[in-house]
Each structure stands twice: as structure tokens, then as C-alpha cells.
Length: 518
Image (cartoon, rainbow, N blue to C red; front, side):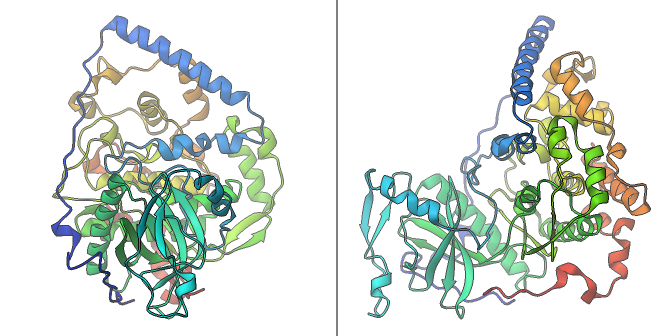
């Protein structure tokens, strides 16, 4: 799809590409903490043990019907456990990572009366309509609420082009709304409206720069990254127009009661993910925040089926702490009709020549070299993809933790010992003692890891060859040493994808076209 001509607003002027104006920024590196003495380690283990006793006991006290969602750390650990130096968690836990166009906007309307109690910043608009037919639907003034969100109503117009239809999602960065783009023949688009707060505006500028580079390198949108149609500054609010997409692969999984995707769908999604991220790597970009929330279906329509065999296998394979009551429930299974996906959220994407912040990635998908502060590059994306593909296959996260030491212990339990070279090289010696991970299996945390983590191959749900091929691919992606980790070019040649290479293009589920206007 050719990249459309942008509408240049008066606010945007002739500033040109953001690459020239917004790439300079300062970063503060964290200082490593000094190695602790033996008594310090003992005291620290006691503190950690008491912490894990409290956290595990509070978890176990919850009812079984709540436990499946608690297993995902209720979303708060999952989506907030990310040290982002650019804009303080640009995507918040409150923002559901989806451009789902079915979302009702009643929650936004219900908050309007309370927002009127806050002091508002009011600025008169300089972009009135010259057509009297639309004047009643366009705001005569521009208002922000106390948090910096743009106050809008269904039917409002922005830039004499975008007509707001509904609210799709909300987060600390701003809101995403569904709009009719009257300069694209009435097509439906997703418009991200950033808060009028400088740190979020700066994060949006960084994302715009990356999206412009992607559009430049891939004008026909063949490489499965979300397409930016336009951007503009609307009275201090950075706005980005995207193609309208469906649910994220995580939201679909959650709405499906965490039933795993069938292996043929895992294959389809995995190959697209490898292709999209390989395109980024080939253009000297590292995404750094790959996770199921940032992989969206083009269209998340589904069919309802019931698979007794899968439900029986799921009851056997689901971790014990999820709750036996939930595992034994009989539920209809949602099967997505098309597995076409797009990679989104380039707010933390980093070019090879740019400064690399110390900590990147959301906790569950963070590579060991990032945890150990050994420096990172494109292989950290490959590790994340390995974790994501595993999650698609089993329905739950591989490394379900929010603590560095426990995370490393889980890695050793699932993948084997951490290489001694990495241990010698890391500044994080507080996690090790005499060349080995400083971890006590007799604590509550140690028992939790021992009971809920097992060697990777023991998560197989079938002995069929294609299942073993999948786990061979995952193992190669979860190699500790970044230099030994599989590249995405090599991954696409893996035997697990062989049957896709043999299929004619028309047979691929992700090759289907989609009417963006719905």
C-alpha cells in the first residue's frame, strides 16, 4: 500500500522529519551496587524469604476463579515491570493493547462529569471549519483535563479530516480513538492522541521517527509492521494515525481463558513475527519490547469450537497454582479465523548507532544479558520471540516472576546453568556466590520455582514431530549466549517452518487481504 500524502497542519509547519530535530537526548546510567558480604547475603535471603512468603500466601488465599488472571500477575506486574527511560512506561497497565473497533465508549462518557470538577486548560482553536455543514460537529475550543488528556466527543473533527467514532483504549500516554478519515475515502483508522505532557510527547516523537523510517523502507507495508498513515500536532497533542487492527494476541488469549493456540496457528504467527522483526534488524533497528500485547491481529474475528482432547491435555499441563477448579471447567474455545498479525509499539525501538539504555524489555521477555547488564543488541529480540512463541503454545508465560534473582533461578531450572563466562563478566555479582547463582531452594521462593518450573521439553503436549521441531526452535532462541543465539534469518529456515515454505502463497492464512474501512 503506497504511503499516502500527509496533511500538513499549521502547527506542524515545515519542520520536516523528526530525525533531524528530536534524536538528541540524555540518559543516566545506573550504578551497580557493590558486592555484599556473607552476612549481608544471609540477611537479604531472610528478607526475600519473608517477602515471598507474604506474596505467595496472599496469592494462595485467592479464590480459584481469580487465579488464572492472578497467574498473569493481574496485569500490573506484567505490564508495569518495565524500566523504560523514554516517557515512563509509555504504554500503561490501564491501556489494553488493542485497536479493537468494537469497544464501547461508555466508560469515557461516564467520567466526563467528574472531569468538569478539575481545573481545565482552555485554548481557542485555530482550525475551524470553513464549511457550515460541519461546524456544529467540530469543537469551538480545545480543552484538556487535569491529566493532560484531550477532551473530545464522538462526532468531533480533528484537522478537518478525522471524525471521532469511538474510544478504543486509554493509558497514561493518552488515548486511542477510532476515526473516519475523510481524506482516505471514509476509511476507519486508529488515532493515537498523546497527552499534552512533554515526556509523553517526546516518546511519541521518537516513535514517529522510527515509523517514518519503516514507511521509507517498506512503502507497500509488506513486512508486517503496523503502518503509520499520518501524524500531526493538534494544539500540543501529538497525534498518530495508524491502520485499524484487531485484538492483541495476548488479549485474545486472555479472552479465550488462556487456552493455547493450536500449533498450526502458532506456526503462522511465529513465522510472521520472525519476518517482521528480521526486517527491523536488517534496517539496524532493535524493537526491545516484543511481547504478545504488542502483536496485534489484523482481524480478530473468531469461531466457537469445543475440543475435548485439548481440554484434557490442558488440565494435565496447567501449573498447579492456577487452580484445579479452573482447569476442569468446560468452555467453548475461540478459534481466530485469520492469523494475520502486525507488530506495534515502536516507542522504545533503538537504532544500532544510538545509546542503548541499561534495562529494556518487559520483565517476562527480558533476555539474560539485559538482566546481567552485559550489554544488548538485536539478539535480545530473538529471546523475546522465543518466550512469546512458548506462551502461544502453552497459554501461560514461561518466566512468571518480577524479581531478577528468581528470574535467573527460573532460567537455570528450565534451560540449565548460566554460562560461567557470563557470570564472570557481569557487574551484578550480588546474584552469584563462588561462580554460581546465589539461590536457596529451601526458601518459599525456591520451592515455588522448583514446583512450578521444569526443563523446557517437559512442557511438550505431544510427541509428534512438529511439536519437537517447535521446541528445538524455541531452545535455539533461548540460548544464553547472545552470540550463539539463533538469528531470525536462520530461524526462518528452521524445519518447523518447512511446510509453510512448501505451501502456495494463496494457502497462507496471514496472506488474506483486509478492508480497512470495515
